[in-house]
Length: 98
Image (cartoon, rainbow, N blue to C red; front, side, top):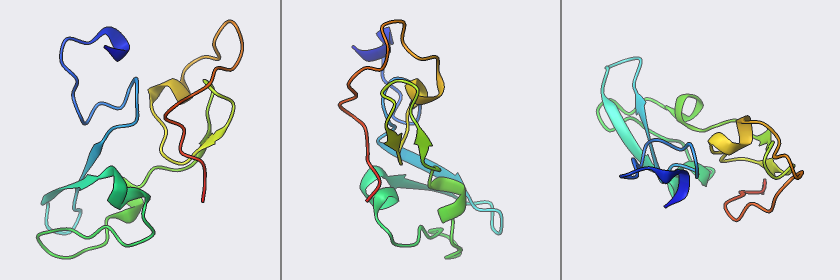
């Protein structure tokens, strides 16, 4: 199991990109859960309660991954960690910019 966790938390995102992310609306306080496919799509991420756009809160910024050395638009915790001792590694979960 990646990261040697007992149970994978889908919101964690430490060892692999989180399959779902949540966002708390600053307008109404409601919490909305979004799937990875919806986050990677270009459309707006709307609050289910009031319809406010939560794109800036939920959609991650693209980074240069420290694990693979590539740009990733949906990074996990490995991308922000240290560069591996043997240099950059192949990341099977890298999400390249469109």
